[in-house]
Length: 266
Image 1 (tube, rainbow, N blue to C red):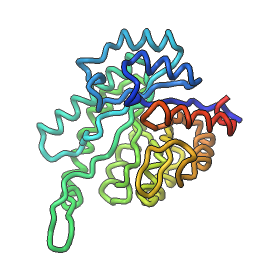
Image 2 (tube, one colour):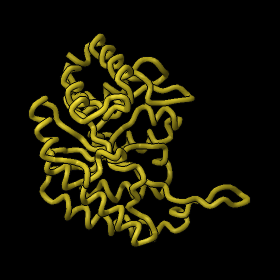
Image 3 (cartoon, rainbow, N blue to C red):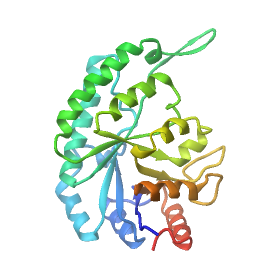
Image 4 (cartoon, rainbow, N blue to C red):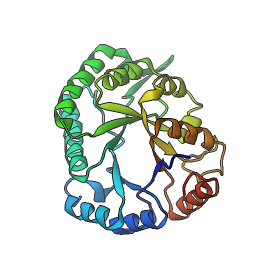
């Protein structure tokens, strides 16, 4: 069996960067996902020299999860430019850390409530939204340059929407973007993103692995209803990195133990 690259997110109950890197090594994992939603992972607080020293000391690498509220298609130019500035800075950090994956969510935008239901503004004004996506892509292409960094679009339950599909297709055809398949999100969203994701199967370069029930995701592996082995089969086919996306030390340790028991991790 191919030994995939497995990683862990920064944990909510493990304080400090070094403690996360140390745990990563102790568990036999390969990378730590730095999460830009957290205060210690803002551009003004991240010490890249220190992080590179931790990488070398513990023999692990990094990926980066971008803020979940980033919006590449926002109608307001000032808001869109602010989001793009965050992305530009993250690309610079990723390049200096040797990160190859920046994980991003697609923002579905505002919805207005009407007597008939909800109306998505990006759907109503799709042409303007897609123009903004293309304009953002032009800048992103420049910033990525020759870094070798790819931006991986994660499924979050919105990839069944036509305007989101069009935007993602614009981004994917640039060669600068790829896909993250999150198996827990797929289950929680009743698999409504799955058709789009699997139609672009070759572009899946990263896997987020966590279990889920109908009530809650990000549960320890093999404790819920997600078909974990099917997700790992896809990861093996595509030779993707696998983030074990549970949020606490005990859940991570239990998940790693199950993967070792089943022979996925040596």
